[in-house]
Structures are given as structure tokens and as C-alpha cells.
Image 1 (spheres, one colour):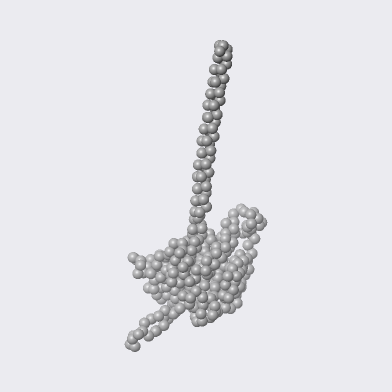
Image 2: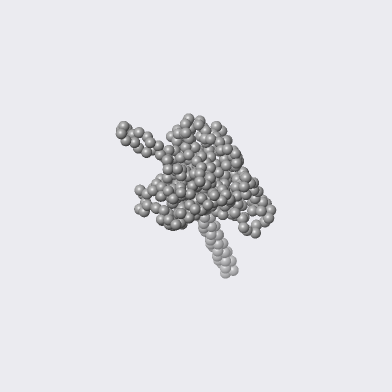
Length: 402
């Protein structure tokens, strides 16, 4: 082989080796890239699948606790929760827009309508301070239609459909739903957060899951506070919960310190009779007596339902109403009564005769038995314990007109 041929051959072999080396490198890079892509894809799939399975905090808060899912009223509770959340969602656009420089007209955002404060429609029920909004009406329609579709035989009592007319009595043969589509309407219209949706259910027999004949009583309560995203649930005999966490018992036997009036936060509501001089004097005189006696604080929240719920939570200790005809209605009391009962609180009228004498097994002694609370009463008082209730009732009774 000539020198030139040898040189050419050597160059050719070197080129081939370089090409092979380059090809191997390319293959290695491609293999590494493929492996990296596969690993990334696997990680992404694992991460996304886990993320999809993990519930958001909002969803977790709204879950019905297992103890309530197994109760006789589980189907009714699931419906009430769904309807309360929908009604609460209807309130939020207005609440969020109130007091801001939002546009002065209705605007479409996706599938929802953003209602501006200037466009909220009001309807007076008889006096300026007693009114409802269009959202009250829409919420009540939404809730009633949902109940009628699921339980067409059930009876329904709603605040807005009742209006200023007589309140229908509880059915003796069918479960009766009692709803307040927006409790604390004045707070709602003003953009204050202490406003809620309340749905209660009354029945004659809590064990059967449906009604029989006889006197009905509240067996289920759902209260949703949309601005605070607080969902309160209670079923008779199964406990009360806030955002899935069971509420503690407020009875004095489970608390290290028994609340008395001196260390109590007292709630009250002036209602719609405050323009009458005698009524205003009676209500303010009762407040004066409590303040002179001494208490930690007095509060008027503007929502009767939340008054009851907050006593059940121990945020308030006692609430009263009805000294001068400013008593509440069944839709103010129904859902909250169940929550109170399930936390060991006491709910009675302002009369001091809420007990029946019932004979015991002996013929010589008698025991006291509580009367079922009357949702149609014109006055009431509730407290975290019986002694506190008796203490406050004795003070405010002195100024009672009704």
C-alpha cells in the first residue's frame, strides 16, 4: 500500500470511528432524554392524580360527618346542606361588592351574574325596618323547589311565602321543613357578615326517619354563614358540628367554670317594636338591669339564628327575646333549637312553667319533665346552663309587657 493510500485509509477509519462515536453519543443523549421524559411523565401523572383526589379545604369543611351520615335523617340532611350552600353562594356576589367601586351595572362573569349593591331590590313587609330583598325571595324559591322535588309529600313553611300573614301550623302527618332564606336581612343589605341561611326539619318521630301523627319537634338543623364559610349541622341524638368538627357540650357538668351572669356575654335583639315608647322602654330597662347587675358584655348581632348558634358554641352565653312583643318566628328558632339541644344548652320560654308534673313509678313522688319547646312561642330565652337561664330570666321578667 502506498503512503497516500495508507493515509487515506487511516483518515477513513478515523472518520468512521468519529461517526460511530457521535452516533453513540446521540443515542445516549436520546435515551437519557427519553428516560427523563418518562420519569417526568410518571411524576406528573402521580402528582396530578394525587392532587385531583385531594379535596380542597372548602370541600372538606362542607362534608357531612360520618356520625350524621348514618343517622335516619341522612337523606334529608344531604339535601338541606346542598340547598343551604347554593343559597349562600347566591348571597356572596352582593356581599363582596358592597362598599366597593364595582361597576354600577350587572355584569356577566362566566355563567354567573354579579349583582351590584345599587341593584338590590327591596320589598317592605309593613314597616321600613322589616323588609326582604329579591335574593331572599330567590333563595326561598330555590330551597322550596329542591325540597318539593325530593320530598313532594313534605310540608314547607318559609318566611317570605308566609309574609305578614298567619304562620301555618306544623303538619300532624308529614314532616315539616321550616326555612329562613336569609336570616339577618338587615345585616345582609348593609354588607355585614353576620347573616346566614337556615333550614330546619320537624317531625313526630326522630327514630323512623319519617313522620307519624302527633306533636312535631325539630329533629334536624342546617345553618350556613356564607361570608365566614361556616356550616353548622345538627341531628337530634347524633350531635352538632361546625365545618365537620363536633361542637363541645356547653353543659356545666363538662366545663371547669360554670358561667353566671357576672361573667356572661348576653345577647338580645330589639326586633321591630322599638318605635313604640312602652316597648322601647321595656327592652332598654331590661338591658339596664343586666348592666347594673354586672355582666361581661351585651351584644345585639342582628341575626336570631346566629344568636342561638353562638350560644351552642359558647361564643354567647345567654340570649333572650319577647319582652315587648318582639319575639321571634319558627324560622328563627327551628334549626338553632336542634344545635342547642345537641350541645347541652337550655331553650325555654320566659314563663317559669316549662315543666310538667309526671308521676314516677312510685305513687308518692313526682319528677319534673320538660315540655317540648313551642316554636310558635312569642318569647324565649336560651343559655349554656339552667342556672344562668334562671338568673337572667328573673331579671328581665320584671320589665316584660307580654
